[in-house]
Image (cartoon, rainbow over all chains, first blue to last red):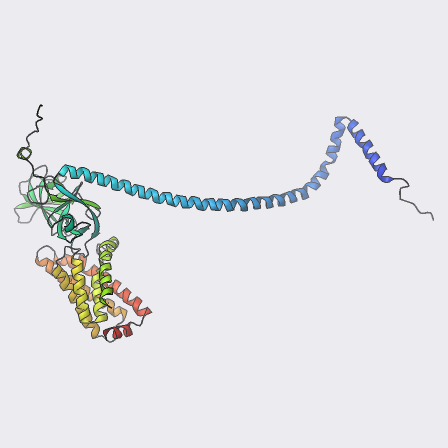
Length: 292
Length: 166
């Protein structure tokens, strides 16, 4: 039996190369519309090959993405931490600046007020409250060493705060105008009716001993009369909320809403000595400019 | 406890009472930690100890209050002495018992103060008892009871008290 020899009797490699060159030249010489045929014929092959291609590309992209994210996250996390730190710092700084601005406003108002009321005043800070529950007092950071003495009046630009009742060398205790043990001479600003302002158990104040025929009514402001030492004339004490006739009494009394909330006051002025007005100022004479 | 430790405690009690506790008022009332301290001092150290600590605390606290120093010293000294007397006659003191005891002492001291102030016509006695004495008594009792409970559950208080008094 004769065996078929499949082995090529000549150099196959050269033949293949030659064939490829011929085909390529032939392909290049074909019209353009025939070239598209090859493209279309390769489409299914491309579709098949696209699957592993996409899979590998996907994995590769995933790895690249993961890597990029990991690296990016590392930097973003650090950046985030820095930004958070910066935010906290800025928040704190903002809060401090707001507090400083508020304190500046308060102190500027206090300084203006100090110039308005004249006399000798001492600025002080509130550092505490009464150590018991029986009195409404505040503790100031200045005392005898700074020239503060009992019975000196304590005010803010808003009005009367109270009166010093006790001092140590470095601190003073101020009895608030809302304490029942405090009494300040007051006058209804509109009607000029005088009375005594006392605190009440509920934490407000009351103007007592208003004449029976007084026209005082809710909304009227009550100011210091200046008759009793400690406070100059005309400082706001409170606003009348209601007027009552005392039972079987000869006077009216009025509930007051104090101008100053003693529980939240932070800086005050202590009136060390009142300015003594000249005779002309006292009588309200206009000031005359002398011509030179 | 020696004088230095008590002095430091008393010095710390003033800012605690006048600066920190007013921030956490309950029903408009702050607990009187000086009164609680006088009670515990009497209980731990006996009548004399309670009396001295009570008098000192009353005096120091009155420097930062409008309260008359004699009234403050008298009330707190009496509380310290009473706590010492009670403590000496009690064999075993549990924290609930101590809580009730401090409530009773605080209410007695508060009522005495309210009565003394009412004598001047500046306070309504019944208002004071309802609005100040009873709430403060509750707060004082809770604080004293809590402090004693912590000491009771962590340390051998009975042995400590016995050794301390000897």
